[in-house]
Image 1 (cartoon, rainbow, N blue to C red):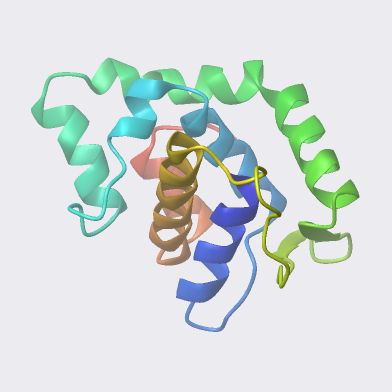
Image 2: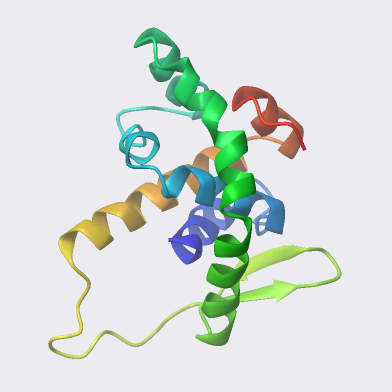
Length: 148
């Protein structure tokens, strides 16, 4: 999911930049909660709409939980990034702290295809990456009520 998130971000960023590492921690805080993940869809145009969806349905407390989820999932996120780097899915450029998605040209062999739920969640990760690409880190943390 972090690979797809990075792809979506880089594809949508006005200058084609990759996301900084901190954004992966925020994204993983969202990815690891089904209710937060379910709110991501192409029917929403942007991050602000995503946030309004929780506020309109009186679930703004769920948004407030993202900050704690990021802290709780810190090691999990580091491990996920480490696995993605080891498997050649991403490159973590240490000088800029950006995580670049690698282009994958091979297709899975028969019997190794992803489950439909994994494909669906990967699509959601890409959408979130595109939404994040429209904003600065500061505005993302403000919308999601995260204190860095």
